[in-house]
Length: 126
Image (cartoon, rainbow, N blue to C red):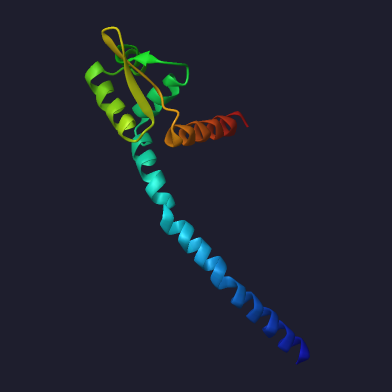
């Protein structure tokens, strides 16, 4: 009986500590929900051609024509894929003479992408 009472007191102490933990968890969740961060990335990377583009850009800046050649798509289709990646904040375009070149962005989303790619490469090597 004494043991049960001690357990109940300990449980109540933990319950009393929980509101601050729950509040912190809720605050963190609603400040910027994880799905709000990941949804644009998931949508941008759910297409194999866009993953191919991202992998190609890890080697450095490439023109739309070069990327189209690498992923075996038309320049028009490649541009559409690049638009989705650009809207998600993963790549950025810049003019180099008469052509547009693309590179991976160094923003937060670009860093998240590099982290994910690194994890995937590590998992594939294991």
